[in-house]
Image (tube, rainbow, N blue to C red):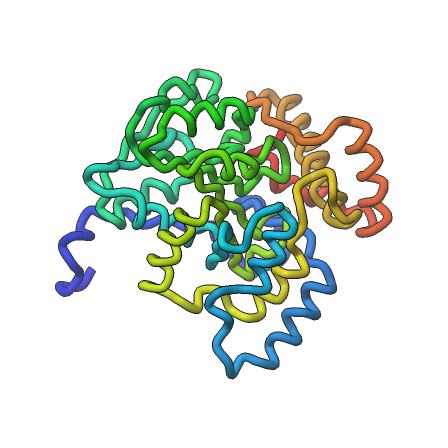
Length: 329
């Protein structure tokens, strides 16, 4: 570090991002990226938007907000789009955490939470998981701290039922509860319907995983309009043009609802990821490894049917979806 680096960051341990090897000879597992490309329509939309790179992007993300609101049955003012879901997580630490409202999250979870707490000078409590690696909701009820829960959790892949999430939110009426749903499309129940019932709930999602847009950097949060207004205040004080025009254009095409109302291609990719992960994990089990039994989001009939679609669409490369083995057995 230089002699000019602020002493307030002296103890900061930065997040270490997953390595991005230049060689293409490996099947890459370390960051849970989708092995499938975005839709061709999304790529065309991004290319068309690139023609307008001389202009700033829409700081309000109006078209993308409207699309997400339509898809998830929300009002546009209940949605905030960000440069990846990491950005909205950082906004939440900035807006809802301080010395009087420390952060709390599991001791085994997404590693960025602890980094964001340190970056923003926020005291935090890491709450141990149970012996089976599940979250004990009772540990969080009445905590009076800003709570961050990844659901399904990473890296365990275990998900809380929606009733438990609601209990957690209801049990902390004086604090914001952030539910990070980066992997919810692979299994679990989204807490999005609860934002109309509780004014202290923020749900975050990403386009990096199931929507095959990790390189585009797009995430969003959903909450009551008052919480979104708080987060917008932070956004406009830091990075007003936070989502570039190409990402926004691709996001409008790629935005689609949770499992049950999906396009065949999207459903095929998600299901293939689950099925491929299960296959690889079975080999690990046969080799003597002990793996956490994680959540799988579709029944056997749906998986089998969609796997057939997958074989037709991408020529049987489903074995590549081993990248999700650390999440879904």
